[in-house]
Length: 354
Image 1: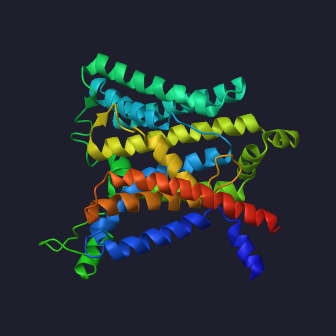
Image 2: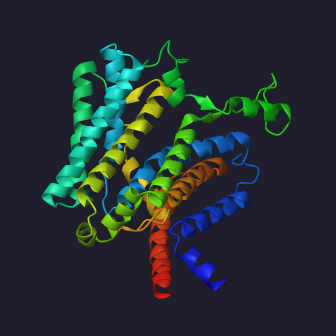
Image 3: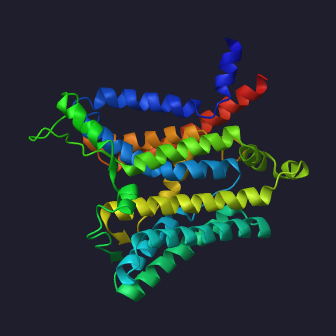
């Protein structure tokens, strides 16, 4: 029993799992009857959680590797208008516009990683500069071409195309309609479910979680990530390509931002230069709540999933219960502080007990 307890304490996602249970219990009491846990409410907080989770998972891997990426939010806005300009202004097909956006993401991520490993500057500084460069470039280019900061009508006439449905569509529509027919969820007058299905962002979130967990636990590259964040010099001494690992992780975060931008653009049919503002901090919050240490070398993708779920549930829970939304940021600040304290305490106790 003691060995099982110690093994559980060493798991970085333990605190996030406990926090998730606590959050659900609290809102189960105070939001009872508000609609938060109705089929529509669940679909809403799952979508919000997914949008944070898509970012929090690669950010967690990057933090385990000992680095930060503050340019992530600006990457979302940049990728958003890249897709919008390619389709609306230059007449390119959506699939090609998405590929171009991911191509830029690889370049931006590689540039961040190379600057960090070659200059020795803290990633906080390098990516903070990237935050302003990307956001400014996004605004300047979009205004110079369109005269506006928004690009509408991107998916007009193509709503049913494969690429739009892959990123901006719904899934489990038939399942929800079946449950409505069985009386298990709310139904419209025509008998179909009030929930048209879950956002594809949820599917992408789950896919990223599975892939990242497999990468960390089952592959040599996952071991390299932990080694690079734990002690980079020691890792280099045993042959770990630390620089290459960190560059790849920066590319991963930039591509995750582009994935979220693609989902948002193809869901809404529009792009906005300000999209993604402060998402980098929300992603870091999700990763920290999920058990990642700011010092690197410790964390998990599953923890980031729970961190994002806490984030989405609280945000929508506050909305459904009618609490002033200004309190949401207060809660986030408290949660981050508690998460860091709990993570440090648990890790210290688990290390002492070895």
